[in-house]
Image 1: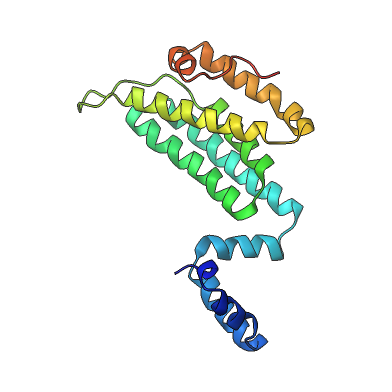
Image 2: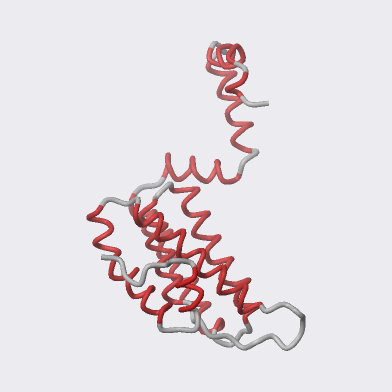
Length: 185
């Protein structure tokens, strides 16, 4: 049941006494971990906490990169997905589109693109890795384009490094097939 479908319910909720509304709000917030973290961020944290969150993600990625180089494509794909998921969670909590693009560019630039082939199994995980990687880059470029042009200017060097890295690797064909630009101006 959606609240927008029940206008009388919305009216009834707004007419509740403040104490009762507070109780209901606290019960609802407690059921959603992301909402709880978002409210904590919004109400109790400031700009330095935002930078701390970014630095923690970057430090975690820096810690995992040496290990990534030793993995096969399947294991690397799992790790990379977790890294990108941590950035998605960061965005859900902070609603910071600049930080999201900045962190994704950081991760995508740091990730090695060559992995050992898995000797077991019938799936080509390097192909799955490349599809995921290229799709993540494309989504990041779309979010980059929605930023203010001054912010785009600040992040364009990092994005162009990423595109250069892709087009000088084995992923060049997949990038071209996905219509990824070779450069952002």
